[in-house]
Image (cartoon, rainbow, N blue to C red; front, side):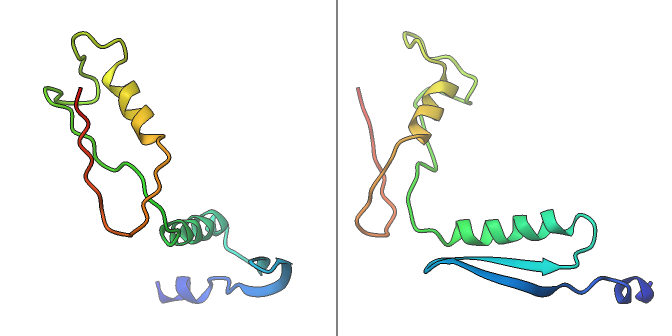
Length: 104
């Protein structure tokens, strides 16, 4: 079993291309089969988690148990309402969380 870990390909940085002041293209070789996707997903998640911003993360509608419920007198389904609220563009000046209550 230890031989398995010894046989892994060890990637090295082959080329670094500076695209702009804030962007570069880095080429790593060789990678084991399938490791490119694994490595790319890990880097993407780290980069996305470090981008500052805000978004709708939780929605509570009185009388609604789940996203497939129907609200009497409302044309849109709860799922459509949730998707529209999640697409809101929000700008918050400070980094604290904000609670917004919307009432008819």
